[in-house]
Length: 90
Image 1 (cartoon, rainbow, N blue to C red):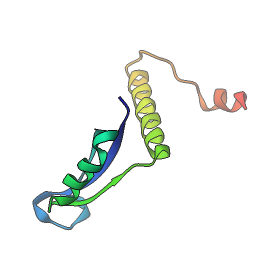
Image 2 (tube, rainbow, N blue to C red):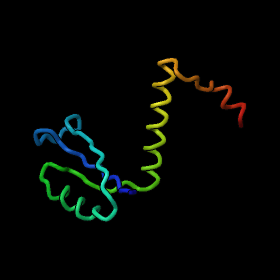
Image 3 (tube, rainbow, N blue to C red):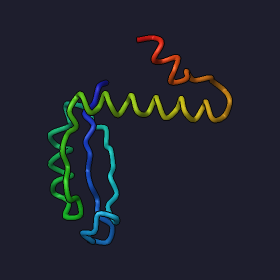
Image 4 (cartoon, rainbow, N blue to C red):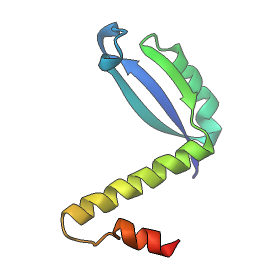
């Protein structure tokens, strides 16, 4: 079931300093997205709740894959292409 991903900035202890803000991703099924947004926006400690665009969701997924590949490379489990190998493909 495909769900919308909602980003919500939560401040710790009610402080406005951006250093004290936690960002949270919440996956909500499409049919519950409207209700989920209302719930998040009704919480006094949630500073911002907004749906992510499809492009941002795709970018987020690509970044997760890339981070996992880097982790595996550092562990010696996979070999990544060099910058020269990537340029040679162009």
